[in-house]
Every structure is written in C-alpha cells, then in structure tokens.
Length: 242
Image (cartoon, rainbow, N blue to C red; front, side, top):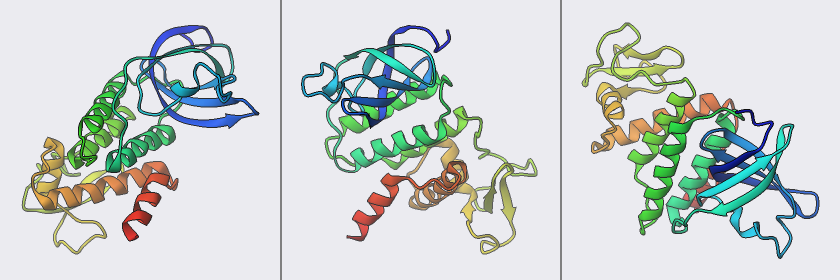
C-alpha cells in the first residue's frame, strides 16, 4: 500500500515532535508496516486538543493518516495501553534508541522485525523499576538495527574467512569485518576474539567483553551516523562529568 493514500489502524510510536506554526506539530512516528513517517498533527498544541497528551514518546499508539507529499495528515491517534514512564538511565536509553531510528531509518521503509525489537526493548526498560539499563539489551538492539539496514556484523569469522579465535586480537574494519592482528597494539581499536564471539552470542557476562563490545558498537554507530552527534550521548556525558 502506498503512503499516498489513507492508512488506518497502524501501530506506531512517536519518535520526535517539533512545533509547526502556532498550534500544530510535525510528528515523526515509527510505524509497524510503513517505517518512519512524518505526520502533521493539526491543532495538537492547543490546550483542549484531544491528541495533545498522546504525542508522547515510548507509548504504544494506533494511528491513522491520509494525504500526499512528504508530510501526511494525522487523522486519528488512540492510546493502546500504557507502559510505565521511563526513568533514570532507562529514559536516556529510550531517547538514544529514538535518535538512532530518526537518523538512520529512511522514511517510508518498513522494518517489521525492528519494530518488534523496539517494542520489546521499551517493555524491558519500563519493567525495570530501578531505571538501570542492561548493556546486553542495548547491544542486541544496535545489532538488530544494523542488520535491518543491511549493515549486519561479521562476528564469527575474520576478513580472510578464518574462524574467530577467542584468544586472538582483532580490529574491525568497515565493510571488511574483523582483521586479525599479530600484536594487540597494532591498531587504534583492538578487541579480543572472545569479545566478538560474545557479541555474536549476546553473552556479556565477561566485563572485558562488555567494555570492548560497547566501544566497538559506538565506533560502528558513529561511522553510519556520518558525523551526526547524538544529543543523548552528549547530555549523558555531561551528567557523568558533573
């Protein structure tokens, strides 16, 4: 179905909102069957607007839209049962996920499996009353996102096609994958083979694997973001410095 027609009953989450004229909003949503879509919510900033309170991130919605052009008209939005509000590190994590989707997902490109992964991630974040974020969850979502975008990671064999060895050292080169090193100091970013294997298996019980996997994924995301700086990372870094 083309976006240039009426769509009804579509599961979606709000990723970002921005003011439009005096009373309206441009709402970027991540929808199950149509991917990232820009919608014009007319009158949504008015105090008595029926949808004003629904344009919140991290809450499951069912939306309808219609129209032509890059920005379509939001016709309806219905709340589909709430998740507890995110707090603490979980809140920053949620906004981090939204920024990744905003910057990396092209518009009108459906990713149903990624939508399911995002929904599950939000549920896990909301269910943890401590507000703490499990790094395994973040790494899993980042991997899913890159896979859906066609940038799937090679983690079980190196650039020569040889199996990854747990005790060997590697560097990860974009578009090439893991390259085995003779010495650990031979590259700017070095990971042990065990880290690559643990990342493949999503096993982060080893502190070194957690640390190196985080650094590796940060490098990969920075590459695909092409210089765009994420506000969530900047704010979280400032808070840590304080």
